[in-house]
Amino acid sequence: MATFIDKAKVKVISGRGGNGCVAWRREKFVDKGGPAGGDGGCGGDVYFVADENMSTLLDFTYKSVFRAQDGENGKNKNCHGQGGEDIYLKVPVGVIIRDLKTGKIIADLNEHQKTVLVAKGGRGGRGNARFATAQKRSPQFCEPGEAAVERELELELKLIADVGLLGMPNAGKSSFISLISSARPKIADYPFTTLTPNLGVVKKPDGDGFVVADIPGLIEGASEGVGLGYEFLRHIQRCRFFVHIVDMSADDPVSNYLKINNELKKYDDELLKRHQVLVLNKSDIVQQHRIDELISEFKKHDKDIFVISCATSNGVKDLLNHLFSLVDELERYEIKIEVEHDSEFDNNDDSQFFITKLNKNTYNITGGKLKRLVNVTDVKNVHQVRRLSNIMDSMGIWTQLKSMGVQEEDTIIVEGIEMIYTDNYF
Image (cartoon, rainbow, N blue to C red; front, side, top):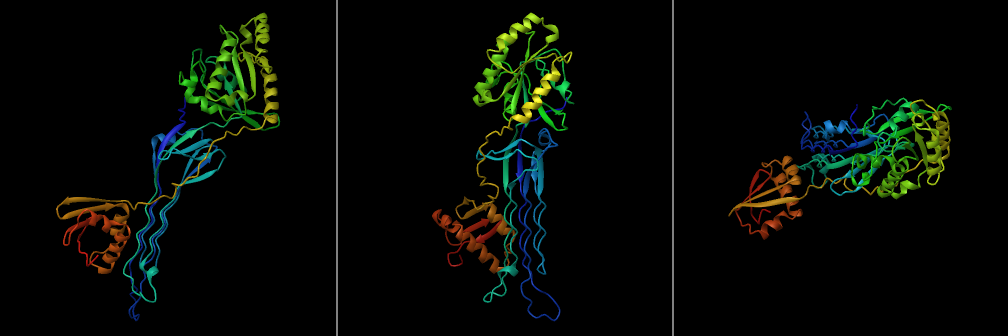
């Protein structure tokens, strides 16, 4: 039996932007060529796409980290770096995406080909050609590419089916779905044969069809996590109506019927407002007077009642015709999922920094933005070092150093670059 996975945690990382380039025109007969450093390419984005050809989240159990391509660095002769490739992650229709950091639901992929951007790639840094002005004709610095966006997300699948099959274990749901569709679930005479939801497509006379979901058997206490019910109750929330199958040969069929409805109410009382078709199964092994008694008893609770036998197919055709009518009459139910504004898909702010005093005269400074700046800084070039210092000043690093007692001639290490602190220089 195929493995059904309906929850998965993934980590997505967009591509970082490529660094700008510091370069100069070096051509024969061109005196004092100007700046010619190209821009870095933008990093790739990460998207999720709903695909009706997928049915589980199994793929995300084998691989849980997905990274888009980084942008290329800028080049000389004003050549820009190539942008990183986007990645599109396919998930089944009905997947809800939740940000584990904020706890917000950021997307409901309830339609085929519906697409959502979850991680925006970083912009490429500008080359020195971009900084040339009439006053500053030879800029000797460039920008680093923006950082990538890194997120941890939870994917949760809520099956989208027209009809949901309800019933206690061994009521005959798997037999029924195998009888009316091409689905072939595992069937045997013991509780919880169905360990995963089964989907079957039922063909209508007009050539169209509808989807039936066989939900694993519920038992009393399912809404509190007893048995398998808690894991799969969420899959019935999108069904437009239910077919409730009852085993007439059980000790107390009416009690079983009421227990299932009670679990629905405790899980989500809105589910009880959905239309139910009551199907009394196993008429081939129950005497007629007992069937009449049960019909009389069930009419107190439900008016839409059919008697069938999955073993002999007796009554199944009439039931199917009724289901065809209901599918045409009842509107598709859209579950109300509160999707909140996603403010994290382009949040690549890595300006946070940390200062550690290593000894009396030495300070170590680290941070994501600083590391990117250091990567495009030539410590032998006084213009580039001064620009790095100015950016550090705007970030508030010098102010914090002074509050920690930094003195003239103290050593500061910025992401591996060693500098000597002086008030006159900075």
